[in-house]
Image (tube, rainbow, N blue to C red):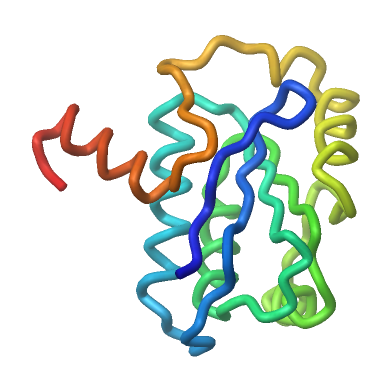
Length: 151
């Protein structure tokens, strides 16, 4: 099952894609929920940017990418993509994805670019501690249960 996991790379938080979607359909609800959970988690924790590493995955669900485009439009901070292969890039291009940054080959390159254009952004205090290496969907469900009493 596809998921996104926060990792610490060069002192910045990078959201990393884990596994690919097995459904490969345009309206994959599961994949859309993963992106929505990432967005909600990011806003709740106060991470002021998104660096998303698609891990050179060539088969990425269209529903995931469409939801990603929607989230990018609503993002208030920098939004950087890493490891985008040709097929996902074609889907992004069809949906008129005009990034503020180029698409990066490595997360380290994205972190460096973010620091050059937004000095100090990766050093800001966050609203809560970050659990690295844990599913963002699980983290968001945990936050919902602890804060809102709902899952």
